Image (cartoon, rainbow, N blue to C red; front, side):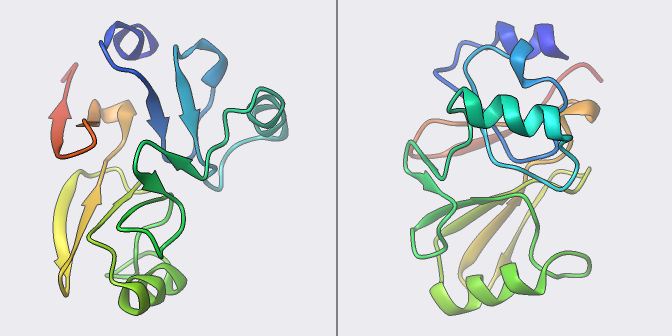
Length: 137
């Protein structure tokens, strides 16, 4: 999978948490999930690879385009994330954590479950639109 990610012609690979070996992924930036070990967390922090904003994506729910590790509750996920979506009404929320890739709406907010890269799921985002993709399966 690392070879595949490194072969993509993109400016950045943005991980939405639970990364195991970011040091091998070219142009990797990301946010934390709940599974990163302390060594991975230290590596990301030391090398400035943890982000709260990249392109027009932000971890702040007050922005229009949000990235988060946890999905909103529906049926499994974070009640806090759901509350932030309902309070701030971002246009789009891209999240990790779940293995399946799907899109759905909560009110007018589009929710994108990026899916697990281990299952070949990823998203290409160009600052305007996104494309759900799958490789290697």
